[in-house]
Image: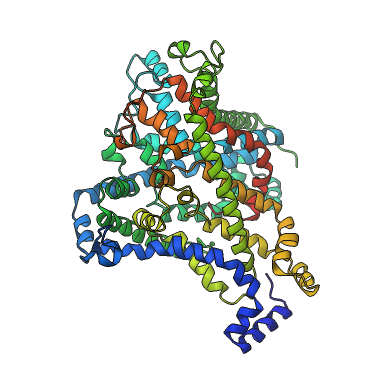
Length: 316
Length: 293
C-alpha cells in the first residue's frame, strides 16, 4: 500500500505520543489482531516451547517442568542409531525421485497447454487435470489399494491376464518408491501447471513476433524465446522444492506403509509418529522431530538466499 | 500471425493434443472406474476387470453401506468439522489479515515475521499433542478445528489482497465516522469476493480431507470423520495394510471390493460436485494471490 502523506503524518504523530497513544489510536486494528495473535502464541509458539522435552526424559505425570533433564543424550542416541541413516536415505531418495520425475511434469504440461489453439479443449483439459489435487491422500492410496490389490485388484488382474505373471505392488519394497512418485505425479502435476501457465501468459508477444519474422521454426521459438522467458519461474520453483525436501507428507506415506515396505518407506514423519504416539517415547521422538525441523529450517534459509542471489524472488 | 502449417507442425500439434487428452483421461479414469464398479452388481465384479461402465447396474452396494449408520455418521462428522472449521478459519484469517494489510500499523513487521517464521519451523507432532492435551481438547472436535485455525500461507495471500485495495476507500469512510469493523464488513469484504471464495475453498477442502489430526486426537470411533473410516475400510482391511493394528476393532468384517469402492465414491463425490461451481473462482483467485506453490 503506497504511503500517503496522511499516513506518514499519522505514524509520526503516533510515535510522538508514545505506546498508549498508539494503542488507543489503532485500537480497532489491535482488537482485530487479538484472536490471531492468541492463536499463533498458543498453537504455533507454544509447541516450540514444548521442544524442551527433547532435552528431558519427559514423563506426562511430572509434566514439562518436572521431568528430568538429560541434555543432548537423545540426539546422540538418534545420530548413532541405524535408523538415522535409514531415514535420511529414504527421505533423500524420495526427494530425488520427486525432483527428477515429478518436477518437470507440470512444466511440460503447461508448455503443451500453451501451444494448444483451441480454447475449449484447453479449458476442459485444465478442469480435468486439476481434480486430483482436491482429493485426499487417503482416497489416492485407497484407489491404489483397490486397483493393485494382489487378489482382486482390477489392474492386477489385467496385468496377470496379459502377461501371465503375478503383479505384486502393494507388498513389494521395490515398487514402493515408484508408486509414491507416480501417485504424486497423478495428484499434483495438473495443479502444478497453474504457476507455469501464469508465467507463460506473461511472455511478451512481441518476442514471438520477432522470432517469426526472423524465420524461426516452432522448435527454435520454444528453445530461444519461451523457455528463457519462464526460466525465472522454473528456477524459483526448483529452489523452493529443494528447500522442502525433508517434507515427505505424512498422509501419503503413512497410508502406504506396511510391514513389507517399511524398510524403504519409513521417513521422519512416520517414524516420529510410530515412536512417539504409538510407542510412547515422547522425548526421543521429539528430539528426532526437532532435529528434522532444524535441518528443514536451515535448508529453507539456504535456498531462500540462493534464490535471491540468482535475482529471483525469495521464498517469502 | 499466420502459423506455417507444415507437415511437421501438424504432426507435432496432433501429438500434443493426443498427449494432453491422454493425461486428462489418466486423471479421471480411476474415478470413472470406481464409480462404475460401485454401481455394478457385486457378484459380477470379481470377473469384470477394469470396467468403465457398470456391469449389471445395481444400487445394492450403496444400499448396503447406508444400511448401517457407520458411513452416514462419519460423513456427518466430516460435514460438521468442515462447516464449523471453515467458519472459524475465515473469521480468524480475515480478522488478522485486515490490520496487517496496513503498512502504517506499528508492530506490523514484527507480527508478519512471527507469522512467516511458523511456516519455516514448528514444534512437531509431540509438542503439538502436549498442547492440545493440556487444553483438554483430546477427543473433542475442537482438537481438529483449533490447531489449524489460521493457515499462514492463506493469511499472507489474503493480507496481500487487502493491501492492494485503494486506501482512499477506507479513508473516506473513516472521515465519515465509520468504525474499522464496519469498514471491513461493508466495504472491504464485498470487494474481496474472489479472494475470499478461493481461500474458503482451500480451507474447506483441507478440512474434508483431514487425516493426521483426527488420527492423533479423535480416539472415539463415534467421532471419526470419513477419511479415517475410509482408511479403516479400504486400506487396513485389504490385508496389505498392516499399520498400527491397534486401530482396528475386534469383531471386524472385511468389506468386499464393491463396498470399498462405494465408500471411496461417497467420500469424494461432494468435492467433485462442488468443484465445477468453484473452479471459476479459484483460477482467478490463485492468480491474484500469486501462488508460489
